[in-house]
Image 1 (cartoon, helix red, strand yellow):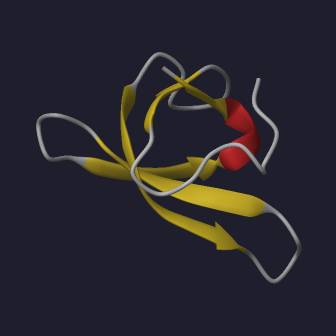
Image 2 (tube, helix red, strand yellow):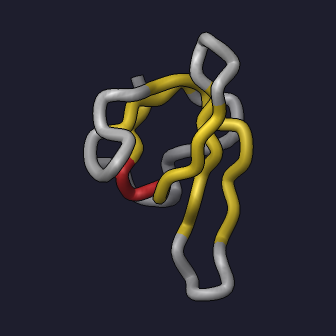
Image 3 (cartoon, rainbow, N blue to C red):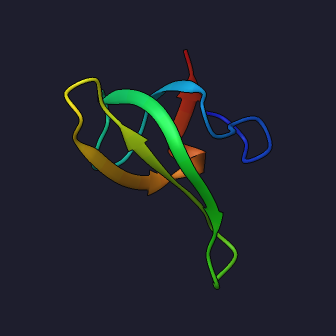
Length: 60
């Protein structure tokens, strides 16, 4: 798994844990939530978007 500092907007990625495990695409929106957790929005090649925790995402 990736740490929060290595994923940035525009990176190709794949989700390695959690609800969206196995899905992948391009990171569009990296944010730090009020509770201190880093989240990312991932856009799949089909155009579908989903949000997940940055710690569950790895660069491809």
